[in-house]
Length: 342
Ligand code: SF4
Picture 1 (cartoon, rainbow, N blue to C red):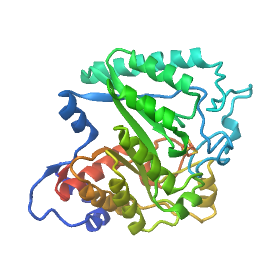
Picture 2 (picture 1 turned 180 degrees about the horizontal axis):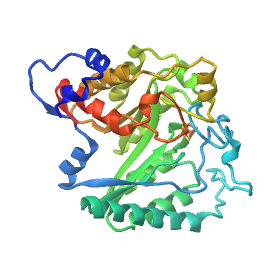
Picture 3 (picture 1 turned 90 degrees about the vertical axis):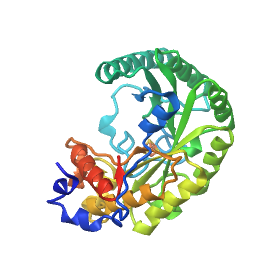
């Protein structure tokens, strides 16, 4: 089906798309897949890991309580908590009764996902992706044990570590820089917005200067940095969203993830939404801004994510974030119209 056919029922998206590709040339978006193929000569897939005991300083009260307003976490939704006593990692204490379980989780999750990906796509190389919560917010001994266990798994050529900029230390970055002499090491920071008033509105618990400083420290050590950005944050104009992309590029990120803010039940954002205090971004605006963002990227910055959706009942709004498949169809078509292949 042609791209225009895909969009034939969505004149809003066609209208909203930025400048048509007037020269008629088609460029490939430099996706992370293309980055890996260029660097390693073959496909490399990320294996997401979710490790018990990790939490976030924005949830445990260290910098704030409740977490980001859009984050579904136990402090806002106590029903999620298990009735028994729970242990959470804390960088100030080397106590970790969960370590053996955590190491098992690394092995089991890595094995299951890497085998499935190898069977489906024939991939042989992987990055262990420490994804859930704040994956540097733990005693350094625990981090070293978990990261090194991941690196011992078959086919694992490196790590990607999702975290907050207020939860890394010079010691952690020095250690990651040492690993990066042998392995492919990425650190993923939530930037979300460069505007402090927005970061306050979402209860982020740190300001934009903090993100900028730790990206600079990571880059100074030669680490690969991926920045996460959200479009449609409360109170943000289109110009503010594009400013965040522009500024993140200037900060030296190597890769970018962008997604729309959607409302999940049992979050602070859901309360605002239900009171009429928050309106989610519409699909046409999101896609137009995304295409503009991709136009802004220099050819060295790879793209790791262009949207996000959630297909279950936890999604409150907007409805267009329910089907990732539909979103991707519209995004690919819009990009194609703008002269890009995703
Ligand atoms: S930083 Fe991440 S884990 Fe922590 S509250 Fe915000 S969204 Fe949740």
